[in-house]
Length: 347
Figure 1 (tube, rainbow, N blue to C red):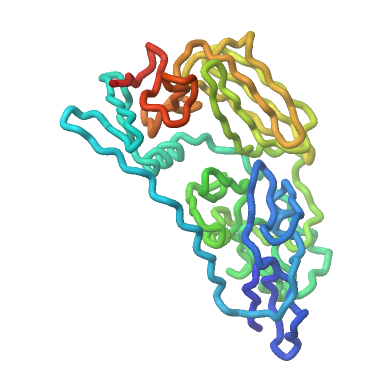
Figure 2: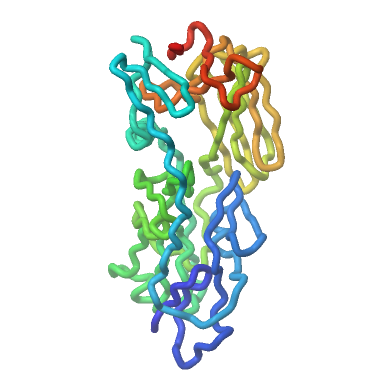
């Protein structure tokens, strides 16, 4: 039987039973924002990835097996390219000029920075003793394996639960990771840009299918990853760790790092030690658990602009805090850094 390619449906169907209300699907695109997941065509938002996959479609129509075509993203205006003078000074279209000192880290491309981040990423704890099927419970033909990234449907006991190759389940034991446009899994290194390609990433762990569940071999808590985002002011770093359904949050600050421990419902936990790009003042740094995130306010130990949250030898950009003349930042010609900042401005 053909399989419907509409998002939110993806069921096998018989053409003779196909009609204008047979398919329930999502005509929009997936939306991921501040830890919440949903579809652009409907209002429902959830925090769990499995709940997102189970959001019922908001539109109806006929099943189709035509290949899904991802809408082309809206074109973005090109950024003005800097021109370099013979003295090695970058001059931008607004007249601002920046020169590099001997202490400035060598700039790199965004792609190289992303590769460097992947190499330094710490492995996450994933399923140690995964849930297994209760073999005494019958399975309906067509039931989809519950393990993430598998997608195999149940045919019969011999082929789907036996010892043959069809009974092998290739799945992702980790958590989905969406960061700055890239998508992937915490358990394997591959990252893609398109959501359709993310769904096609082959599972990195082999095991048995999970059609009904029922047997859990472990009550141990699961260590999960939480997305974070940050920005800065001349005096503070404002960091958000997106974690929902929190039961307890503990954060301790040190001059060059902080220890984060967030316990969530469902026996999930986020633990991390985050080193800092520059020192902070521990006694003047605070955190506040909110509904969907933990907001952390780090007091800078000096006036330097942070090029990254964590220590790195590769820098793609630096942040400025103001311009001379008029007390504003729009239309300024000269950018200001602290005297000990790695970049110095040449007028």
